Image (cartoon, rainbow, N blue to C red):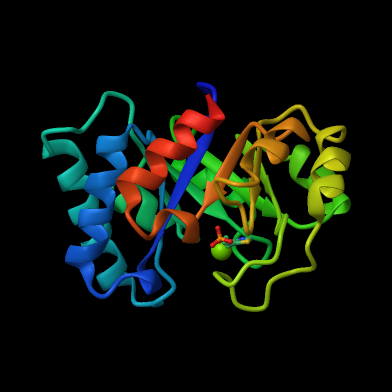
Length: 210
Ligand code: TZP
Ligand code: MG
């Protein structure tokens, strides 16, 4: 796979009042230069997720500022990743396995897997996953029933357990992203610190992350 971009933006539908607001945030992120966006929709309604994801893809293809190389990742659902013609799927510990997701999306799309402790990282490392996410690094309000925080020390520890690209997630902000990268993460995944003024926030992240 091509190297992961340092900033991995996550658009969570629960953070926006309606699809137009989410699409506007996507436009701003793309205009800021974000090249990796995950669509996270926990509504559970497959038809709605697919319709909204398709709109997001359409906009990213037709938008004036759509850059080369934007990758759209579907959270949870490998089937909807393929149906929506996204570039990859991200599965958690309670979703289908990375291997099963791979069977659905094929070799040309990315598969990412969430982990929360060293044992899960070791297991994920043995799969065909393209990247491994570790978290929550810090306290997060964006996930229901989050696992215990792993902290900077947790990132440093699991960095030694895999050569796959490592995405840090959970409570990451413009103020703390650098220390997460210094601990060995290749990329930081962010929900809440991109919501208010997405363009300005993303530009600042990209500047800080270099
Ligand atoms: N998985 C671990 S923490 C988290 C997810 C989806 C939420 C990250 O959101 P935020 O707002 O950047 O802490
Ligand atoms: Mg999931």
